[in-house]
Amino acid sequence: MSDEDFKNDKTALFWLKRGNDSFIVGNFEDALYSYDNALELDPENSKIWDNRGVVLADLGWHSEAIESFEIALELEPDNSRTWSNMGVSMGASSRFEESINCFDRALELNPEDDEAWGNRGTAYFSMAKYDEALKSFDNSLKINPNNPGALAGRGSALRFLRRYEEASDALEKFMKKAPKDLLHMREEAWAMLLEIRLIMGREKE
Image (cartoon, rainbow, N blue to C red):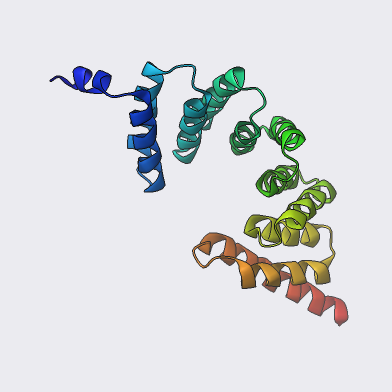
């Protein structure tokens, strides 16, 4: 049996599951290969297009990811997860206004999505709109008080708003609650916390 015969002998569901399994263990290239094979057999499946977009984003190919999400949304316009996923790739491409529009649409469909709120806050933060960022991080934390990205983002937004005591409290809370494997985020939070303490110390002199 040739490689082409082998591929065609499998169902779209087989390739979707294979892609999902590969994604879970971090084998993104194989996941992409599997989703592409699934789409050859079932090109109208929005879930596969969405999953493919997530893999492309994890590979750092955000333009291609956005194209995949756009196709998914043509097939299923009211999928909040896909809108949120596209918002992340828009933000990673420095298309922040479009990113926020995607998160707004996701939140219209699912206002209880703490990740979408947190990522919306990150987009506003990247535009130096710290008040708007803080509102989004706070909304995220109302839904999930342990969301590490929103905890860190809240502390960062408060720091740039010069609300140093609140920023220090938020970052300390992040350090206590954040998983140990978020090493880069923890290092950034610790550096900002030290900076804030120095600023607060100088203000008391």
